[in-house]
Each structure stands twice: as structure tokens, then as C-alpha cells.
Length: 278
Image (cartoon, rainbow, N blue to C red; front, side):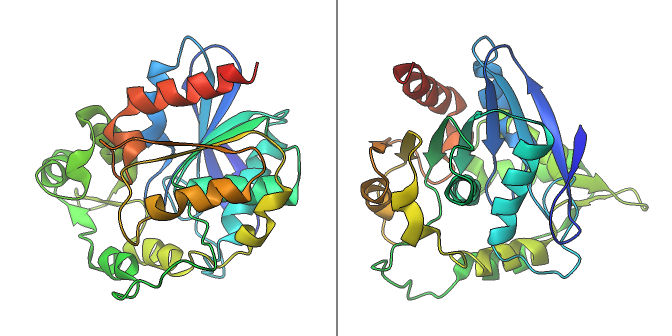
């Protein structure tokens, strides 16, 4: 694990997931962390060298000193890692918020990435209908159980009920392994505090990325699961239409957690896309 300094006093964590070949930077969703990409990276180990970062407030990264989770910070985190590691136009894959962070980085510094494969990136069109339930994700994050007797207890709890019961066992094990920290009294606690997750959800769409998608020139693939109302899948086509030359692929058997629901399928899809550019 390497540490990289970012803005707002944040110290990021970067993890080497192994493999041989071109560098693939993996960018996680809100509430997750770098290691959830391990099952996908293992499937690609003979084709790509995968690295992944923990964004501010997630995994082993620190929280902003001012407590501000405005999404511009996640774009700054992505750029900080690319710059600190001296990566030259790496390929990158992003999920949800992590996809938005990669788009922000490419907009602000054109040519940062060689190509982007994004699963339901969170960038909002102006025409997106308002969710009548408000922001249920933030409310749900604040209600999350933050502490368990052990990682095994956490794993069994998540495996038995939505929403994480759709993860493969390998992906769920990776999430639990790095998603908790040991406490002084023998229990484990979420590495991403519920309040940090809630503030991240509340700040979603706080950047102006949508208005600048037309400036992106690197190849982009947008992946999504089945189209559902008020879900990122419902505006994936609009994201693609806003980015010159972008492509879209839908997978009816997946939901918003697609990269953790079927890591081999996502791995094969992004590999096919990257190979098509050679």
C-alpha cells in the first residue's frame, strides 16, 4: 500500500492488485474501497496490471480536514494518484461515484487517461427527474450499522440480506476484509464512517461535470445494468450521448453493483473495449 497526498489535507491509499500488462486504475463507488476490485483484477491478471485507490473518507484514506465531501475532491484525488505515481495515460475503470471522479479528472486535465470504462457513473443530466423520496441513500447511510463483533459476523449479516447479498462471495469477502478496522475493544467498525458516506451521497451532483462532458476526447465505454426508474442506469444513454464517440452496453442480469455482482463479466467487457482500441 502506498500513500498519496491530495487536497483538503487528505492522505489517500493506493493498492497494487497485481497482474501483468498495461496499467489499469480502478476507481470505487461511494461507501466502498479499492479492494472490492480484487476479484475483477484477478480475472484480468494475465492482461493488465491493476492498481486501485481508496478515496477520501473510504478504506485506509483519511477524511478531509474541513469535513467537506464536495465531489470535486474525488476528482482531485484521482488526479493526485495519477500525478504522484507518474502514470502516463493509464486505462481506468470506475464505478458510480468512482466513474464520476475519473470523468472530472479527464475534463480538468485532458489526456489524463488513455480510455475509460465506467459502470453507471454518477453524472446528472439537467433533465433527470427528481426522486420523490428525496435522498434515501444518505438517510440509509446514517442508519447503517457501523460495528460488528467480527468480520465474519459482518460478512454473514451482509450475505443474508439486501443490498450486498447480490455480491459474489469473493467480492463480499474483499469488501468486508478492507471495509472494517479493528477497535480497541475487540470489535470491528466500518472504515468509511456512516456520516462520511451520507455526506458523500448528499454532495452527489455537486460538480458541474455534466455540462463539460462534450469536452472529453478519450474513448469512453459506459456500462450499466437493467434500466430502472431513478437509478443511474436510467440516464446512462444520456451520458453516452453527451460524450463524443462514447459507447454504451447494458446487462439485464446486473443492478447498480454490477462490478461486484459479476466481476468476470465486467472484466471481459472492459477488456474487449480496451482491445478494440488497439
